[in-house]
Image (cartoon, rainbow, N blue to C red; front, side, top):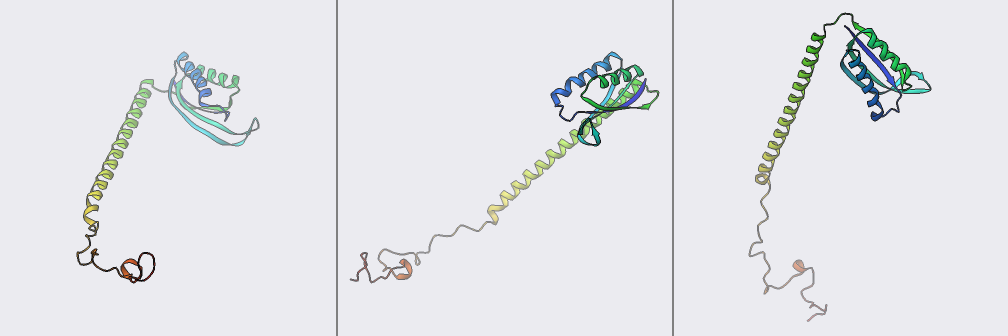
Length: 183
């Protein structure tokens, strides 16, 4: 079995719902011709170096797989028949591949990806816990650092009902009554 890499460009207006049947058809070809899809990378819409069919952009996808020449021939025939595929290129990566070794590589890569994801989640959880702890410490320290609430007015500064009102305390002339005339 040989190891190949195929990069193809789809029209940029092909939605995810429209790409799924195309990918399903390619997956059927892998099953029919006893191939093994190692990896499919969707690179997304990119600007083309030159116009193809009067289009300046295309949706790039890269597939790495193992198979025989019949699989490659059938995939390229599918690319030529379907107008959604603008360009494709298949490259031979390795002429003789042990399929079991490739499956082990895939399993190892998936395990490493799972471990990276788990460590990233743990790091995020630790960061969230540290931030929560810091916020709690800040909340505990805030009342101690806050100035004490103002004390009630001292009895001598408080106004008593019997004390005469002065201009400074009320802003009015004490000589005038409520109607504004002097008594």
